[in-house]
Image 1 (cartoon, rainbow, N blue to C red):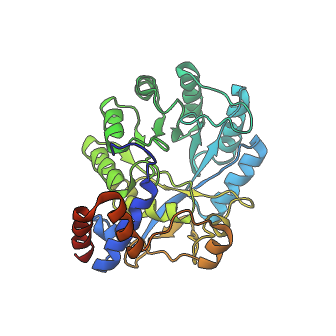
Image 2 (cartoon, rainbow, N blue to C red):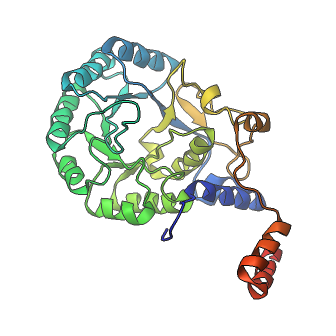
Image 3 (cartoon, rainbow, N blue to C red):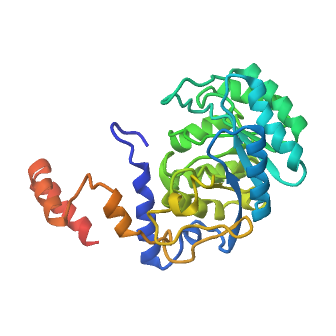
Length: 323
């Protein structure tokens, strides 16, 4: 975890995929989990008005989802509350409701966005409790550990977070020591890879915290985090995030890089059984939309090593490559 430069966490799962294929075991088997299927919740990707939010939630309910997650992101607290109230009035007691405030990483690329403080987060927490909301996600900046801890102690609604915290296990251990969240949601493609996320998961279990990873990337990221969730105890009580906001964000779009998208059936997703991560890349799609930014063969690696590291280290590299 400690090095300068580009943090290539997203490439670490490829080595797990190789290991699984070499041993003939699925990733969840390597992690000591179990297969089958897991329950997922419909994670909406857009801020909506009360009526649209209620319609989306009801559609998800009819599809068999047991849970949904809304997104609030307005300067006006009443507008945020209106969206939650619309869904609560339509489906309170029928579906598990989560709300993402997106304050962990304040997105202001397109336009300005609200910045919550502890008092606003407390007010929203009180309101969500009245509305029957099960969890609130990222209600405060990702590095404001003290405020997160205060909110967690105050709130009657579970507080979740850690989506984009990229410091891996060391950072999450600090967060757990400070008691920042009820539910920890690292993403293996952002926070150090599968190895780091697995350690975070185990630390959660030892401390009595919940674990359900963030999955809002693409089909590859979803698959990686699906395997981690399959190895967690939290799969028995929590739902896994399923990015879903038709018609703009659907499995065929989200998982376009895969030969077979992850399609839920009555709010459940089957865990891959093939060795490794258990997915197949759609090479036609990758060729059409992807861009290669690095290429190295064994031959070019040897020449590079000779030029940059010398003969002694190149000989050692050769020994390693033959193992």
